[in-house]
Length: 101
Image (cartoon, rainbow, N blue to C red; front, side):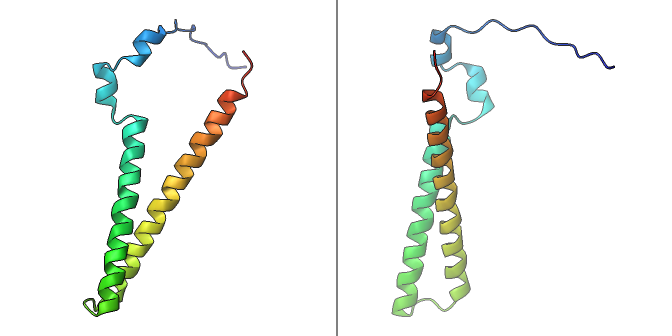
């Protein structure tokens, strides 16, 4: 049988230190808030591009239908991504609320 070594449990950080933004958090990338705002902004931009393409097509200023279809697909994927992120956040929140203390 193979022996499994377990690392000791590390001491938890105080809540005050978790709320502060330290340099290591900034270096690790975007926080959830910034990431979600970026996703929402992406949805807005792709939806706007799709609306502009549809308008230009309707008045005859656009000849390439494939560009409009690509932009519409991008908008749909961006919206689906945002909805899935929202669903995962709500699932996590529900799971946290079910925890008995």
